[in-house]
Image 1 (cartoon, helix red, strand yellow):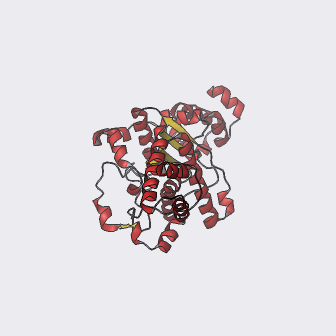
Image 2: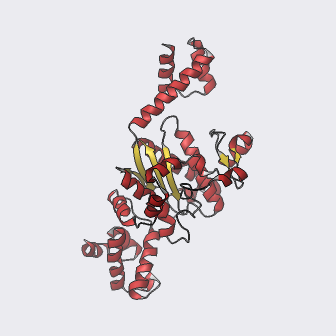
Length: 343
């Protein structure tokens, strides 16, 4: 009966800290040992309940038009540490498991395991903390642009492999001179890798003073003391990314490498488009420049004639499934006429 009462108390979501919860349960006649046991069992119950209806989701935001989220190394470090903070902040009420991620200059990608509501709650929390960071470090104007994000269900193992490859290939496809495993601001370097170097340079978070932890993470949220911090202040992503699950999805190094080298962008972008999320403008322009150089031997899209720009848009529609409205805006073409041509 006492265990049931304690479980019910926690499920009610009473917003008290641990001491206050202990005090209330003690007055109910629950001793310290029984209270700890009740909390532990209730936590397991909550976790199993949340995970019972969970699925894999690809969560992403549309590329921002005015705001650069990450301008330098410190921005990226803070951005990655916010992932850890979000996971712990939501662990009690909207738990998700992070499978992989990638931070780009004006958008983000995550693959999460949880309910759709929990995955969207993670995105909302990450957006909120990022807006607070931008306002504090660059001014409120930088934090004013609203994000358009969504969560797309991943129905099976093959699609999950495809989505993981898509997330990790983002920097390479966008023009960065990195392999998927060579880009530091993603989880691409975690699966099937030797991580022994981490133990030689990192320290457990618990060895830092509470003041240093709060200064490093810009939060009062407590993170697991065993999580590792690298010398530059970055929490090692292997502490909070379930990369072992990612390895099990692929099953072997050969399967992982094979998928990483497949051009999966067309299928995934088409799916994102059907969810009313446009492709990042930068990706569209870079691809347009490649087409212009290949077809017209012109390096700049701005140097193309109207007819040539329309021809490039036709190719972009085929290769990236870019929508007419975005293409008309980016390449300064009449929307209605272009829509008729592209169908």
